[in-house]
Length: 188
Length: 101
Image (cartoon, rainbow over all chains, first blue to last red; front, side):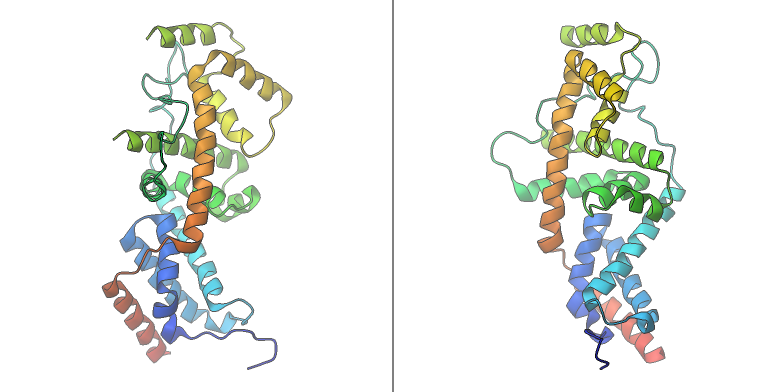
């Protein structure tokens, strides 16, 4: 092993060593189990193809995650490309009078998004996962990269190839939708 | 009902007032960067007369906090496990590729 190489790749153990980690990473961001498993497989195969470019500076898992992340972004982009028109028409009035006001019943029902009493962490996380699944892909990608991966705005715009004003609008609409989805789920 | 009507009348009074749609946008923006003075003022005035957007301001903050804990709990231990048939399928596709290469 050359001196400056800290890690080696061992593809024959990938599925056992990193399968669950990569699958979890994908599930948090894609929500769909079947798609997540496919993404894991694609990641491993892409990793095999790119083996020669691995410099041994990052741990195997870190390197694989970086490939998976790229795959997830591609997945969002391909879905966003064939996407329906996005409007706030289901939340705010689109015509006068009172254009731009909350539609009847669409505004927040209370001051807190969380139910009173003891917070069930696990249940809450499940609700977030379900609500993420309902977000249109272009909104989901922006929302996840910003709030889960905590990436910088400029990096996200570059990765998704969108303008910054587009970014702000998508992020805002994602928040509107997530808020209303989470509120609805608690009320069921 | 009366509350809703009063809220609409109040917020419809001034042409210069921003709508709830715009106010919520500014609230989202405010979580990411500081607002300009004009935006800040417009938002403040809107919130004085709009109870729904005041609720939204609190809830969108809750959402931010929930997402922080979602992100942190899932970075370490979200514990999604690959189904065994999927793992086997993935394993054999890796082995095929290794064999071919």
